[in-house]
Length: 228
Ligand SMILES: Nc1ncnc2c1ncn2[C@@H]1O[C@H](COP(=O)(O)OP(=O)(O)OP(=O)(O)O)[C@@H](O)[C@H]1O
Image 1 (cartoon, rainbow, N blue to C red):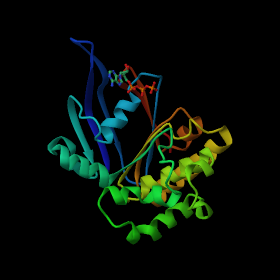
Image 2 (spheres, rainbow, N blue to C red):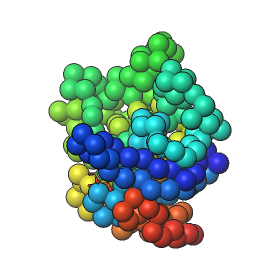
Image 3 (cartoon, rainbow, N blue to C red):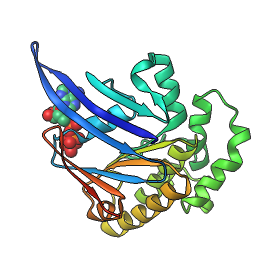
């Protein structure tokens, strides 16, 4: 398993004395090459689960495993390294930097990890070609459509060859035609890159194409469906 959450509980401070229970004993696991859809009503804890899975938030209790590493055993520095090396994030909005070309955006994780972008340029170009942007490598975000910007985001998330891909509503800013294309692309990439993918989504197409669907309610897993 590339991603395991076992009996994870997370609370947030709520005023001076109270705490709100956002995740209440959630367990899920995602093997490589599989896509798990995470869905449920607003406020049920989906983004919190994603943040825990991405090691962005430390839960109050429970066990989290990312690419074979036990996250609760790591200090902040090792957690950050694990996140950088093994987790790719795709958010609802593209988070691209306005002055960088598509190629430079995809190379950004290499820069941030202290690597030499020149050594990784060919791979970045290949990834952009894989997401259908071979002809747009030199364009800046202002010269790309919303769907193209999201594709750059996906290429960037895969740049570090992560074991785990986490996406928060990756299609919600797109019209239904583009959303369907994006889902086809994501399903293909998850399999081709052999990555364990956990997607927060309300998109029925994404849920139909997922290997498993986890429905949350009030911080808990209300239903788990094996789709195929
Ligand atoms: N930083 C925070 N501080 C305090 N409470 C929070 C924080 N983030 C989330 N919550 C609360 O935790 C619960 C779960 O929130 P979360 O954002 O994980 O749900 P969600 O299912 O992703 O919602 P949405 O679909 O609206 O994004 C909610 O009650 C929310 O108000």
